[in-house]
Length: 214
Length: 214
DNA sequence: ACCTGAACACCGTTCAAGT
DNA sequence: ACCTGAACACCGTTCAAGT
Image (cartoon, rainbow over all chains, first blue to last red; front, side, top):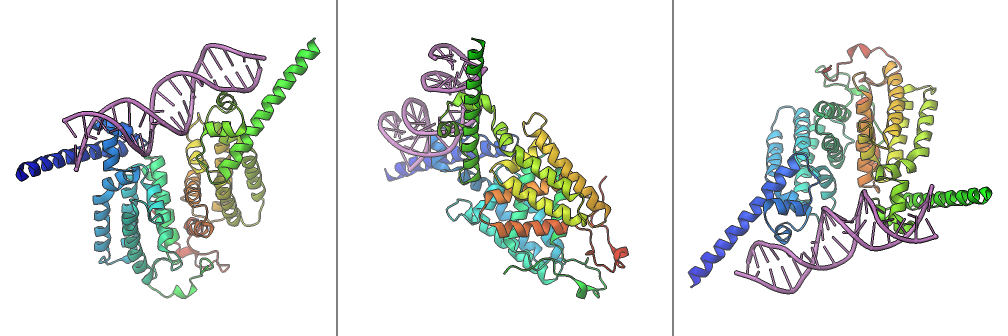
């Protein structure tokens, strides 16, 4: 009896899990291709489940996004960890920021979620956003210590800049060169003024690039 | 008889104009304050007109936005014209870009419209966007001629960067300092490498900041 | 001419009813 | 437990009917 009930329960659970996977597969494909503004009802329809089923698995669009992004976010943070051991701290930071843009732009709507998620503790994406923030912060601080990256920029500013460029990429996904050019401008804006210049003798002339406001 | 018909017609027209103004006033207030995502039906309701009336006056959200922005856009372009006569070409450009951000962020949804409007010839905002593009281009080229601004950046890249920062401002309107910091990074990224430095003797050491891809 | 408001196909979300 | 799908209040948009 108990066995039967358990196996039935397990059956139900696997059925539920299959539904969950089907929803995720449909959402993944839709958000990755053209129709990023697909409605949740449409996702349910394509996945062959009732609307209620979708909303119990994923009570909001953010929850669905979080499920889609979870593994990739973890990989991105692991990559940051790895890059903390790289020889050139500035290059490590900039490479990771480029990765982050690709990561964010993979599904439509992520740039806004990333920008809002850190501040909104109620968001299902809050935990992931904080992890990304932390990774960015570690890489930034390390690059700032080598004095290759300006000292007056804060982690949340870097995140905002990356979100902003990801938003542009999201708006015009067919313009990779364009976004790359924007990233170049942004990265150069983050650099300390004189180029690394192995001589290291002109660093005294580095002007303050803006008034610190703290 | 003819007089009567004419006066009645005129009466109708003035009534129509009054409706138009009321719609614009409601939309202006809504988009400028919190609820930037107000529905057009709700605008009609608040303005006390039928939904059909609103859609005949403004057949799309972009059309409504264009009506709201028209005068401000003209003023912005006039300001650009004026700044073309300013002493410092780079400062003129950067000041105008800051103005542009404020301009774009005044109503919600404009940053996306600005980014898309230039490329979408069918958009009601196309003409305005092109005018802004042109203004930016003039200021940029002039600043590049003085070699204070990097030569490898294109007008549409500057517009994208400004749109992106405006988008951030739109997402978090209560963080003026934050957006200002992003603008600083962007502007410094646009500068030619060595600071103006009145001595002008170290300019030979300016490294190329990125491989030109054209 | 200009306006109205019901109507349409949709959206996100809920929930009683089923298994 | 889990799922279904009708139902709700909304959205942008259209259009027959009124003045």
